[in-house]
Image (cartoon, helix red, strand yellow):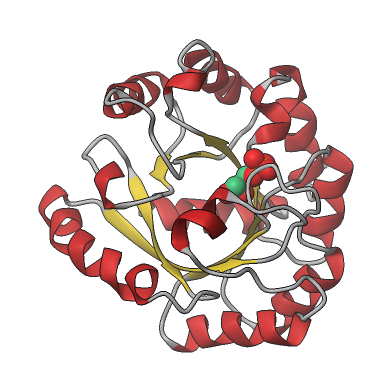
Length: 247
Ligand code: 1GP
């Protein structure tokens, strides 16, 4: 079974899928393995690994360690083509649909595609939509693209539907890591009713209560990074909120 299918099975059975984001940068060197061990014990369904910038050359070694310890799929959430390697179970094959920078719409993808084929990595085609979470995010700065204002739900939904019609397998609504404002319930509900492919939602989801509201209005996969980075014991609370159909 593909990694993507395993995620679909989880949200079909449990209401939504729970993913944590780990940044394999040197700032997290001491905490990475404890995050993975806690994820193994906390009903996390998959680990996204990625970041906009790596400050040393050891990120691939850290990914290898994550993969050795993880009992759940490890999925690359790439900040760039340089992060692709064979230690992952799959990758989000992203196109930054909300931007008008051709390099992030198709340029990086053309460079990556032959490498992904050579490695044999499962590519999960994903339309990536950046929303304005109230602060300038790394993605906005690094990609040179503007986020969509949070009150423009028609524009957000149109981008998502364009991604679906282009044949993408999922849509990622991103407020940015550490965002002040997460993607609103109103947008999640509107977009999830507008499209018929899975909806990944992340950025600034700071509590299980917020996660619970977002899954109930249609988020298929919730991504949590910052909120559990320094409070590993909250991981299970998020799991209970996200797997909302569990008895
Ligand atoms: C970023 O959606 C993820 O791409 C996670 O964001 O770190 O704010 O949880 P946070």
